[in-house]
Length: 55
Image 1 (cartoon, rainbow, N blue to C red):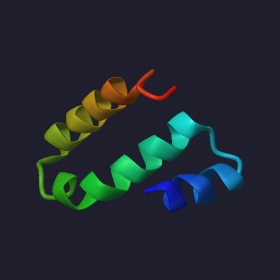
Image 2 (cartoon, rainbow, N blue to C red; image 1 turned 90 degrees about the vertical axis):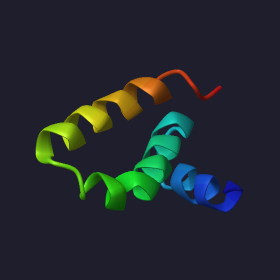
Image 3 (cartoon, helix red, strand yellow; image 1 turned 180 degrees about the horizontal axis):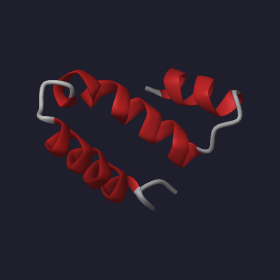
């Protein structure tokens, strides 16, 4: 939400870092249910998907 973005950015995070933090917060519980190798690979893919998606 805009409030979450504002909060993160007011703490010094860039817009891209704020989006990544918020997205990871939503998917963390699901990722923790996966085997470790799938969790790590999924986190990498999410990071790649988010690169350059802001702005």
